[in-house]
Image (cartoon, rainbow, N blue to C red):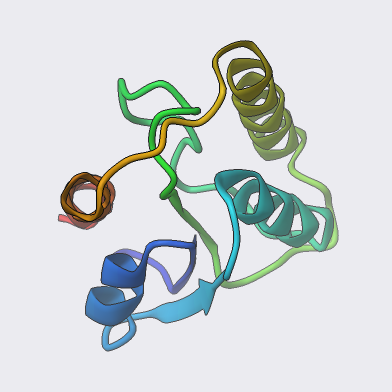
Length: 125
């Protein structure tokens, strides 16, 4: 890692594997809850370091999201970060409204945890 970060996630696998190397803010909730927490951080001066919709999986299909933001905050709002997270919230809400949320089996949920974690792992490395 180049700079200290905060990982905001609702993915138990990301929480487990990343807690040793960086600060993790674990959210017991939905993707929208994760995105709204990230938006709160951005309003406090943090910067988005990974795109909230960085996979090709439709936002209503995976229940897990891990987003990386700067640990250090500044006094100026990063408008680009705010735009990205707002677009992520809007897109996710739109897909959920149009297509609903699938009722996945436990095995598929574990697969989605691995995919989400793997994306962030590779972003770090």
